Length: 180
Image (cartoon, rainbow, N blue to C red; front, side, top):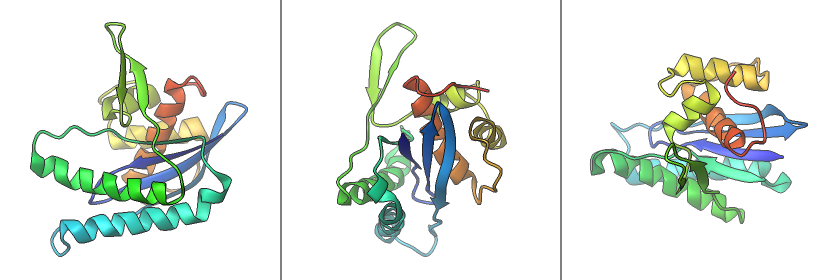
């Protein structure tokens, strides 16, 4: 089983592929790109994100994916929402170029109702992967290492965050065990 997951932002998105064999997740590949908000327009940055995602997918699409997910985002203003949604759009266009679509994320709320979102909420990622909804970046990276056995370096937090998004999705689906 293979999952493609994105930590989507316009400044520094991350992506990962995790493969699960006999219930054990392993990181297959990961990447990130950094854009420059001071010298690049939103449109250019969104194109850079789309190009980066397209190139990453070009190297991996032949094997396919069982799930494709991303971190959900709810900003408090258009100034927060626009850049993330521009990056979402770039990643979505890249994914669709290869005939894939993002999977929705459905989970059970405390009140017993099912809720479906376009991605995994950040607090859910941290809760499922680390065991606490307010975990910091180093705690997320450490939990990703423990769950996957990954010994390499994460070039940026966005890479470990992308892995955590994928792991949270797998945990929620009951395909791997959660918080370490």
